[in-house]
Structure formats: C-alpha cells, structure tokens
Image 1 (cartoon, helix red, strand yellow):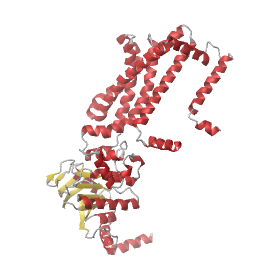
Image 2 (cartoon, chains in turn yellow, red):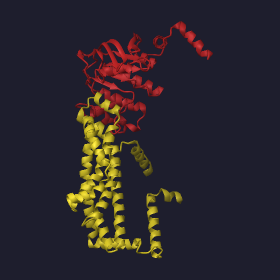
Image 3 (cartoon, one colour):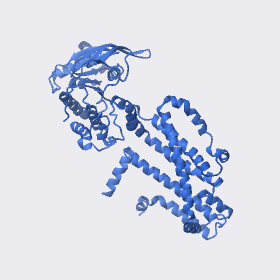
Length: 266
Length: 257
C-alpha cells in the first residue's frame, strides 16, 4: 500500500496538496487572518473571476510574450558569443574579461538606468530579461565547447572532418548537455527578472496584476499572481527537461531510463 | 563487400627525430616499409613508439628528417591514412552506423552498414555506442577506419584495454581484414605475443631509436607453437635486456626474494 503510493507517478504532488489542505483549514478556522493570507478557495475564486473576464489570460499572455522575446534574443546572443569565445582563443582574450565584468553587475541594479533609457514600456522589461538570460547561456556554452573530449576532436581531424563538419558533428553535440544546463538556469533568471521588472513599472502582465491588486488590498489576486509565477516557472523547467531528453537521448542516463520504461510496459 | 581497387602504400621514414622542447623522444629513426606489410612496433611505455605513429599519421611534425608515403611527403593528415586509437573514440551522440558514415566523403548509409557487417556488428547499427562492450566499440571503430579504403592503417594499441578473449577475437578479425584488403598496417603495442601473432615484421624501439628489426617468418594462420615462442622470447629478451645466461640468474634473484 505504502510502496504503491510512493511509487505512483503522482507522488511529487502529495506535498503541495497537503500544504493546500492545511492552508485551507488554517484559514477557514481563522487561525490565520484573511488579511494576512486568503484561503486557497478564495484564490481559486479570484482566478475563476479573472478567467471569466479574460483579464487573466491577457496578463499571462503579455508576461509570457516578454519572457519569450527576451529569452530568444538574450539566449541567442549568449549562445553566439559563447560559440565564438569557445572556439577562438583570440576572441576569448579580447572579449571574455569584459563580459565577466558586466556579469558581476547585478542586472536588476540597472533598473533606474534602464527606465531612463527606455521608459517604462516593453523595451525596458525585455532588455532586462535579455541581460538576465544572456550570462548563464554564454558561460555554459563556452564551458561546453571547451570541455569537448580532445580525443574526439583529434579523431575527427584524422578522419578528415574539416571546420564546419567538425563543429556540426563533434563540437556542438559535445557541448549540448552543458548548454542545456545554461538554458535551465536562464529560464529561472528569466522569470525572476520579469517579476521584478513588472512590479516596478508595467501596465499589463502578471506583475502588474499583483501590484494593482495590492493597491486595492486584493490579497487573493496577489497570491494568485505568485502561484502563476510558480506554475509558469515549473512549466518552462519541464519544457527544458523535455528538450534535454530529446537532445541527449544518446546519453547513458537517458538510455538507461528508456530501457527501464520498456521493461515497465512489458 | 566493398570494391577495393587500392592496396597498400609504401612508407619511408628517413632519419626522423622528434624533440619535445629539450627532451628527445625519437632519434634518427629510419624505416622502409613495403606496401602491404604488417609491421608491429613494440617497446616499453615512453619509448617513443606512439610518437612515431603520430608522426606518421601527420598529427605531429618531425623535428628533423622526412617521411614519405606512396611517393609523396607526409606534411599533415592524409586521407589514405586511417588510425585506430586505444579508446575507440566513437561519437557518443551518434548511432553506430552514423559513427561510420559521418567520416565517409561520399558514402551512403548502405556502405556504412556494409562496413559494420564486415566486422560482424550489422545488428547493432542503430544502437548508441554507450550500450556496446569495449570490444564491440573497437570493432565499430575498425569499421569506421575501413570505409575510406585506407592504404595505411595505423593501430595505436587498439586492443590494450580489452580482455584476453576479446583481444584474440579482435586479432583474428584485424588479420582477416588485412589479408583481404592488402593495406599497409602499423601496430603499436606493448604485447609482444600480439606483435608476433599479427606482424610480418617486428620493430623494437628503445630510448627513441630502433633496437631490433626482425621479420617473423611464420606461416599464417599462426599457431602458438615452438617457433612462435622462439620469436616471442627473442624479442622479450631484447626488450628486457637479458640474454639466455642472464635469465637463469634473474630467475634465481626472483626466487630468493
């Protein structure tokens, strides 16, 4: 019985469900004042109303849009620069220390400057997200390319793989697992940056929804916004994991998983 | 089977030396290897045998001297030279058949499969290298080396990491393919009996120069009989710097410990 419960595929959901139940009970019996924390049911009600009005999806949509655009641009630049610095010693000597200097400035500290530059429109938020996702992807791309097995590169050269073929077949695939670690970090930074950027200045998005609700003491909506961020963060992490499984299907970890699954279905 | 029009190439190593910084690794090595010969290079670790192989492969440049393959100077990596490394060096993110086909200039998947069939691994074509055994990986590497119909095959202790039985299997396979394809083969090994089992000629390298160069005049397939043991002992004695009289003495010392 216990074993079955623990091995169930829903096992990771047990703790969150338990927390919800305790939270509801504590609120219901007024152990926690509703001014401190609304009950889960109240939050669900707020979610329902906002869904009906359509506001909820509009906010989620505009937040996700910012996140996505910022991620693609920042990740793209980080990947290309990482590729360049990973492959060329000269480029690395010229550029890397500058990048490291910028990296050590907390990018959220730039918010006043960014607002002065770009105002409080979309550009400033996307700019901050770009800064947030750039560094993890840059660092892990450089590291991934550097740590490709030199024996494999030598093999490629002996077997006549020239520049582009060598990158396509040997160096890039060898760096993928490290780059994906960078992607997962970057996704975390992406939401973090966006939350902060949206609470400071926005007229749409989940952060705006939370700040707006605060003005009217709508705690249920504030908590809803927090939960939405948790869900979106989890979703993007799951997407990154799926990407990992697809791109690293050769990796011993995933090969083993596959065979276990096969045995399980028999 | 693949059509094979090319055969082996003659390799001439002419007064070659190699220094790493101030340290000499090879000193004035001269060799003439006729086309299609199977040569084994033996020696203690660090004697320079692997360096010689890397020079022949064009992976490193000689400090002095020159090398000549099939009439032209070796000045870098060449297409007709293929190399088998101690670790198979398969790309872990490509299936076996893709590992073979990735190095083919104008090959089809069919040809890659043919190559795998020749080493007896056609049924593993779609597997990842990580699920293969050490011997199977080395066989895939061999299939990969053979796709370009090389005229010179360099083997850098490719069987060193395998267990004894797998090693015997692989030796048989390499010998069969060599007999069929007629390429020139140079095997670097520290296993004297492997050298005697496979090679037409065994070269012993000591402190960066050739100490012994003997032809193994045994018929193929080789049995491990008295003649085999004669050659094996001849090389081992030279390698361990002992003569027949000394050996008895050496054994006494061992017993007295």
